[in-house]
Length: 405
Image 1 (cartoon, rainbow, N blue to C red):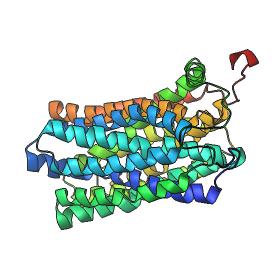
Image 2 (image 1 turned 135 degrees about the vertical axis):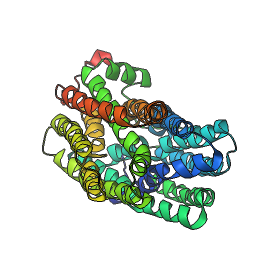
Image 3 (image 1 turned 30 degrees about the horizontal axis):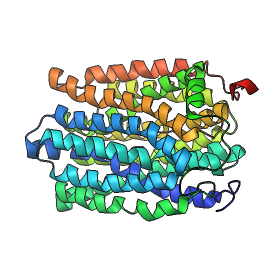
Image 4 (image 1 turned 180 degrees about the horizontal axis):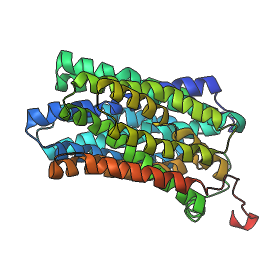
């Protein structure tokens, strides 16, 4: 067995982890393109589709906690391997589910569990353990940028596949593509993990790390801010195509808008990760949330046109997942990297509760009121709230008396 103090090379971690996140996040960012084809073909309401995606986000968040624990304990590559298989099965089930319940089980539960094992919490754990602290925020920015590039790459690709092959066949093709994450997972096998468990010395138990984090006010504030992040981005990502079509704009405008969000998110996440090496991360987060509230407000007040949509998408893209590197880097900075995947999973669970509320409320209130106006207002108010709660966060490493370990 290799000695536990060895690490993977930073290049290997970033390339393999980046491609995995590109595929996983890229596929899921395009799910909004299936809302109208599936509901029209199956005779379902928008709330039915939105509920399944809401369950997906909730399952992703809840499973992410356990995926993080398993990755910290047994190695990330095993979790990614299983996640890739679940992704393929979920997409196949999503294509052929005949009832809302089976659609929710496949698009919601299976894909949610798959995303937990193939996205940020698990990959960031590998980064935290294998990249030096002085480059960690930057490296996390690179990984987040990869997920953003996935959105830029995959959303137009998914639109093309739907138009060329139909919505069912497009999902099957994506299921096959998701299996590419299987061989990539083996390149993230960390030397500190044997076939059964991690052999590196463990200073804290899982229970100790859990209790310490949840008693710490700054951790609670980070979770509150991340709830808002999830609410905003998933509501916009899933419901904006239908919102624009309701306003008389063509589906191509929505596709281009989602692609622009992904493109500019590449720059936004990289910049946020780089600035996190130089500036207070809590201030970066507060700025992002305040800026989102302003951008959404201006978008709703301005006359709607393809140009205004593209400007909005570009600005939101800069702010889209730029919260991810500073948030996760702060968790590592405060608590260390031993239980980073698990703690990142808990923070992300809060994000996914917000995602559940954003996507479900979007469908629920649309079906009740005939518009998305109320949800847009909620998104603005929450942006102001998240900006305020991040300002008091304490960034220093937590002090642990010897008796607490």
